Length: 288
Image 1 (spheres, rainbow, N blue to C red):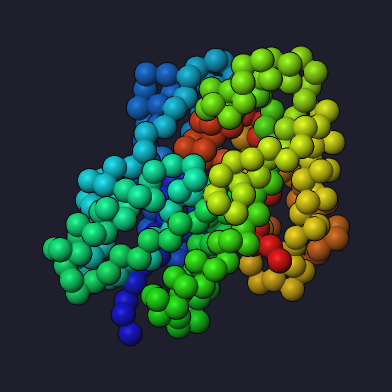
Image 2 (tube, rainbow, N blue to C red; image 1 turned 30 degrees about the horizontal axis):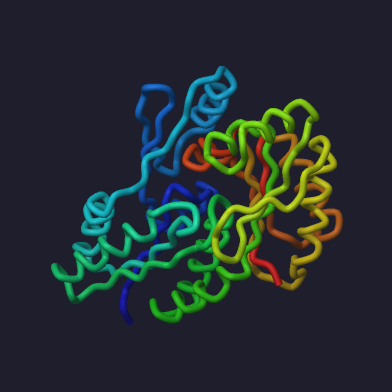
């Protein structure tokens, strides 16, 4: 059977031990904190992540740089030369051009090596949603799924992905062009916490505007209950912008009703955290 490796990018969040134990490849992404260029490699220590969010609170500007087709070529080429094809799970095409860049790179590399393939999957998601898809891809691989069968499965379940989250500081959404400056100022003044999702097209949409953190998190939990399948083998990811207390609250509430659920909590990667800011919390899962 065709040998293949599973790859993800820095738009996703995943348990670091799972990443290492299952030989999942991680395509790094660059980001800036002020004038300092950094690299998100997927295995940053917690101290680095905490420092990132503390810098945001101090008012330092954070921004990201997309992965270029050339960078993809360099990364993928090393895997192909080791005799593996690639199943790559990308950050949503509705949020970034990285998926398109990966397609361009795979087409170019096919001209060099027609023996091995690169199959790119648009996750239609981000952060822990990509993590949940990677867990499923690894499970499929261990069950003996071929590259094509695994890709087909992921390309079906990605449309069932649910990402519900709230942000603490509306100015980060304003900088990203998601809301107007006036809306951000009014929201800050009245302690409004928007509840958002990544929709079926992989784009960011606002679902509700709540007053205060707890009300917003209870709204997220209600939406979770509407779509969670208690018989699912898939994992749940709770990701946060250095807000462990919020993540713990959501996890405890979910486990009260679903004690058999497998839940991972991870600090949000800088690539997504640059656009959502400190205090953000998300629940990501493959729904009904």
